[in-house]
Image 1 (spheres, one colour):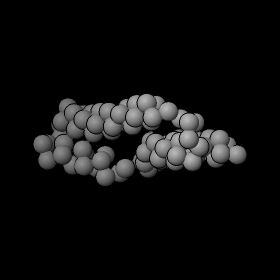
Image 2 (cartoon, rainbow, N blue to C red):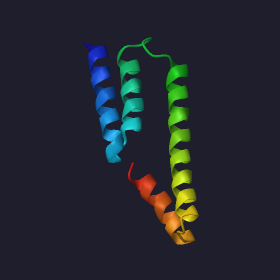
Image 3 (spheres, one colour):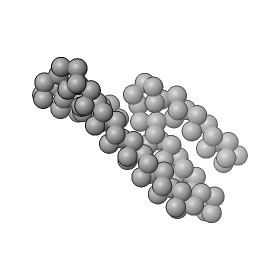
Image 4 (tube, rainbow, N blue to C red):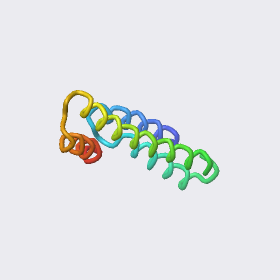
Length: 90
């Protein structure tokens, strides 16, 4: 039953991502919760690795938003606005 709930949380998190909602972080929280409720189910190395990858993805997303704003003619102020908009959408 616990595994089914984890799968449902993961699928719903994937559905949230295109809408700009924090699906990636809900996946991390879901995996952490599952690991705490059922010890030994998901290793700590896996959880830390997934969290590090999530942080790298968020930094890359913010960096690319700023880079492409600048590339297509946005001012420095618009670049920071794009970075803030991407960060605050999560």
